[in-house]
Image (cartoon, rainbow, N blue to C red):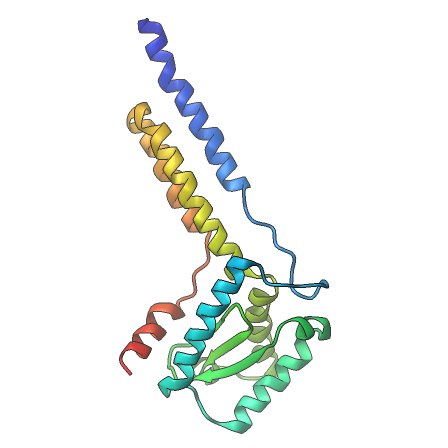
Amino acid sequence: MAMEQKKNPSRRARLLCVLLLILYACTTSLKPVGEGGFQPEEDERRLWKEAQELQLRFDKSGLVYENVLVTEYVNQVALKLIPTNVAQEIGFQIKILKHPVPNAFALPHGALYIHTGMLARMENEAQLAAIIGHEASHIIRRHTLQTFRNVKQAAAFATTLAVIGAPAGMYGLGVVLLGTVGTLGLQHFSTFGPLMIDALDNK
């Protein structure tokens, strides 16, 4: 009996390691926009609705830089980069936000924002194109939906790991924490969030 009790923590630890490997392996694979027949999925439509509401808040906040020439120029650069088949499946719109922090971000439904602080530091059109291409890729590859699903999946796995890992003592708890922190560490979150939401709330 004593021997069996000694083996159990080891078995649990091995099981935790297996589940941890599964956790990293189970990432959502999504078909990029533009490969034909794109239709947003149910949870994606909900994300789009929230993004559209956020865009409306931006438009009403007074934070949008209303310079027609600059805005048209930025959108013209974008049109050169975004493939026609992608533009047919999702509408892209680029706006400029009055904010000194050099940053840019994309909302999942096709809205892309560039801070005035970013534009002020650019020296040529190639740099602008690089920023637009990077942010557009988040939309085309549906990174927001992928992150949303992975975080939900990570939370579910973390709960399972906690239940299984608890009887394994501190070693098991350490593996649980490693799995949880590691998974969340894989997700990419833009720095714009707290800054821009605070700005909106202060309007």
